[in-house]
Image 1 (cartoon, helix red, strand yellow):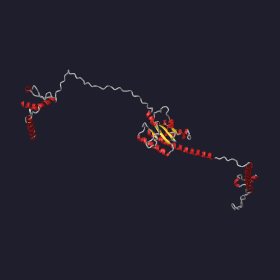
Image 2 (cartoon, helix red, strand yellow; image 1 turned 60 degrees about the vertical axis):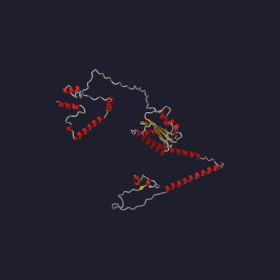
Image 3 (cartoon, one colour; image 1 turned 90 degrees about the vertical axis):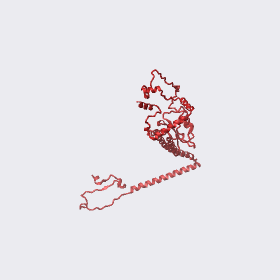
Image 4 (cartoon, helix red, strand yellow; image 1 turned 135 degrees about the vertical axis):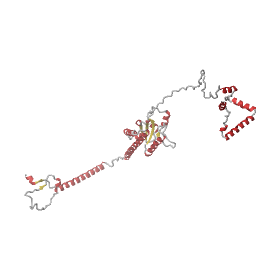
Length: 387
């Protein structure tokens, strides 16, 4: 009984080795423990009382809980079985029913008042964007014009570069430059801003130009305006047909970027035919101007007697020509009346052993001996005339 209690206490108390425990360790471990214990004892003996007091003070000031210490009374209770070592080790923590747990006070931040944000009008174009659109003709650093204007970044960078490259190609192949301004499908222009005013402010001195306001996603809202020298030659109906054809071609696609592609390609083709008509009209107008400049009205030279002499010569020449014509016509008619056609005598062989047919013969004559037989369709045999 005592031996079992001693083993149990040794398990609970720190530093109390079990009897016979050393026999379970390997010799190396046992010797190591022994050496460690000897070193500890040596160090503890080497320490002075002041050092020990300093260590105790250090433990006390560290605010660590003190280790439990067995009193002689507790030892006696353990022997009697009144205290079971480790009984409360796994027991639940006692809870005081009268204890009150106050929740921690958390200081909340002051609520931030949400200021009412003004609603953005999707149909309005900001003043900054309007200034970027129509401040001047857009251009790059080298002075070359930029034919596609998109300050609102409605297209991605790659889509913008592709359409701008096509407009540069069109400008290099055509005398009519095409400038395209991109807007959102629902945006409206401010009062006083229209495509004609933009042309008057920016493109009057630019030369032949086609100005386009294109609403991305709504091609049917697009506006198309030509310079004054083109409109002087091309009718408004033809301009409307060109815009209508470009819009119809754009609606063949569902993607807004591809719609813009089809619109620009078709409008470029229409501008090519408009340019050809301009060349024809310009050549005709130039020819008429040269004709008017080179036209010289000659005044009559000489007196009235010379004029009469010229008129008499002209009348005599005309009479001679008419007389020669009538003489030739009369000679031809006379020769036609004197012309006669003779058919050769053809000897034919006997038919069925007889020199001629069965007592029936016919003589075919023509009513007019002067006309060729091919022109006389009414050929009547003479024996029928006797009947």
